[in-house]
Image 1: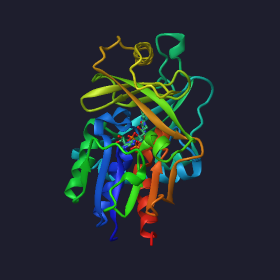
Image 2: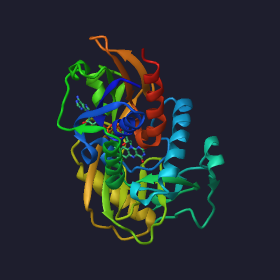
Image 3: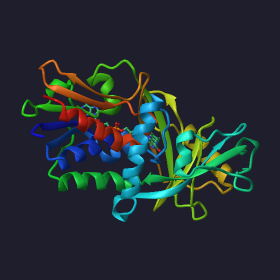
Image 4: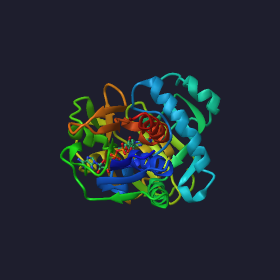
Length: 322
Ligand SMILES: Cc1cc2nc3c(=O)[nH]c(=O)nc-3n(C[C@H](O)[C@H](O)[C@H](O)COP(=O)(O)OP(=O)(O)OC[C@H]3O[C@@H](n4cnc5c(N)ncnc54)[C@H](O)[C@@H]3O)c2cc1C
């Protein structure tokens, strides 16, 4: 493709898209206010699993496409991607195993593998297990950046646009990967910030699998190479401030489930999941100056899970731009 491509956003969506375009032979540059660790992507868990994103049919297809890419990346230890056992639990009744998860090896957990916890509130009633990719964001986002620059792409930080038309006219194709920023840049009233907070705690030697429960209170414990991510929260709010009460609640809940003493908190991270009520937006549109814009935002709680599937779809759309 001949297009000179500008990508707005340096989170997982922008970086992944930029790699697909740069490796596809396009001149590609990212422009973003914040990059890497300082984005919502930098605050994520980031397990592969479809969560808090619509619509189900498209989400599952993009997720499964991404799964395959991530399994390949997990074979290279430099990427920060590894395969991890995910144990997903419910607090009431029998947890359903999604149909799409069965071919990936999902199977029901039985006692004694269902944590009984310390308190009544830590009690789980059922669960399933499967192997999923885990992206250690402290390494994966750097891997994506390096892969992009190796393919000839560039990243320009500290650039804030008021409008997508402000992208330099030397670029004939604009790709909008601005996450929750699309609320303003694409004037999208369908976008809703689903605020998430996590606590980073020291590595827990006894924890070798990721433990997740989506039933309230949302809880997850994700072991990474050098530390562990405790979560979490999900509420409609655009506050990026750390809430100390939430940290305390998260640490108490996770420690209770894991049956361990409360660990010290190394860091707290907050991000705004870009949830779009009408569904993830991957589509072509026109800017007021008649350039084509390809939107790629609204991934909610699944930005990592959908990243490669959506980036490939954006590339296909670009191939059809006259
Ligand atoms: C606590 C938490 C846990 C999560 N766990 C998972 C998980 O386990 N698995 C999973 O798949 N997903 C998870 N998510 C969701 C995932 O993090 C998001 O879906 C994903 O980060 C969205 O990526 P993005 O690149 O679209 O947006 P972002 O990472 O938010 O990046 C947006 C980019 O656009 C830039 N930008 C925005 N506005 C402008 C502007 N006006 N001008 C210039 N630049 C602009 C920003 O600076 C940034 O670079 C989690 C999220 C949170 C908060």
